[in-house]
Amino acid sequence: MAGRLIIPALLAALFLPSGGAAIETPNRALGERLFSSTALSTNGRSCAGCHANGKGLQEIAAYDDPMLREMINFCIRDALKGEMLPADSQELESLLLYLRTLDRSTPTNR
Ligand code: HEC
Image (cartoon, rainbow, N blue to C red; front, side, top):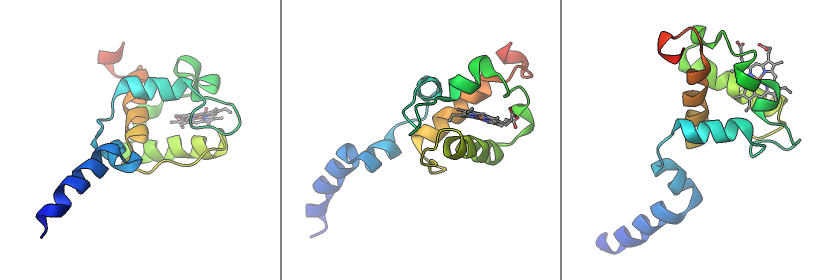
């Protein structure tokens, strides 16, 4: 009986937007694209519009991941007038990875 559910479930995981997001790996390239695009915004702004070259983000090494996720989401809500992203979403994790590369206090990023 249960076997008949496996194929539809696999197809759903591959093609439904939420299932698709869950199986895609967060990555810096996506984070960088989101950072400079208006995809997350309803007012035509982008992160890069205010934080060009990491402006205002020099101190983020002091924040752990949960804190940084919150700050990203506050800017999405308040500055971009967009929808806050779920904590485990590919978009939020990708932004997080990208922001970590802007942190000049980490020697490997210099
Ligand atoms: C309209 C301008 C504006 C936009 C657009 C914007 N931000 Fe911000 N952001 C700010 C301001 C202002 C602050 C708080 C003051 C500061 O630290 O510069 C801030 C703070 C932050 C912080 C915390 C920095 C710290 O050290 O406290 C992070 C992280 C951040 N923004 C990420 C983002 C991301 C990611 C986006 C895009 C999703 C974004 N911001 C879009 C203006 C903006």
